[in-house]
Length: 355
Image (cartoon, rainbow, N blue to C red):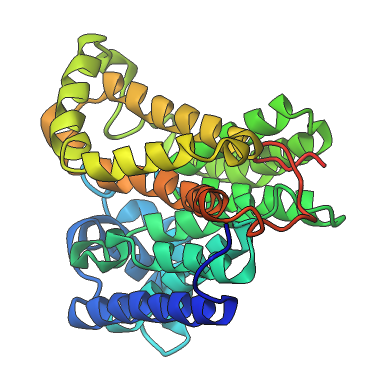
């Protein structure tokens, strides 16, 4: 069955949705400049210190006791904020706010690049990304998850490229993700495991080496040299209790699953109606389950009140799997509507694109 709307009309329609989404992101950023929540307590505080001192050690001096600013967090996001603001002079929260729509644009373009479909449907994937509520939530302006999503979508867009530089670009995206947030390390481990499962040993080896040598060791050694052994602020082995997973499951059900049930059911039905897409993208789906499962298990080690921890973190933790599954859902929609939408030159298995 062919699309009722022509290719040009679909391109214009989906392009208008991209523009609408990015406009909404820009309006939110202008009306609510970076200055709330974790930006105020963590990212902006560190970026301002880094901008004024020019030394990485300043990232630790803003909160020597490690009570709020998470000294274990990697440095790429505050460094990005500091460098971006320096282009216009002294550190300014209003200037760094402009990064927000730029990151949304980058994520939208990379979602298009990661989608294996005809041009109009690639643009649809970009529109879906630009319209995500996360980017239009005022308190999140200036948070690090936006950069993490950009980097992981960049990695996803490289997994089935046959160009000589693709494995190195994928590895670089993953290494930078590790330097952005702790969840980047989890995502990188999942990417590498999926590559190994698909027998992409060379790509997996390059990714593992760069993640270790660039994304993990330098920052870990530097941090240890200045602070000594340092545990995660919100998690610890001493806090482990298996029953916390039951409490976390209840909280997630109430906070996320029930309010989002229609979206979850819709996505599940769409995938069930697109078996070919599920076979092609099986590794993405498995990877998302591994990622979500790992993050869920981490709640057993939470040192915070579980209900509070889930309430104020679930949507940010969910952003990565939601963003990375958008290309798959768009491809599934194409399969359901048309047998001609997917590019015949792209026949691959799993997320890793084994040709």
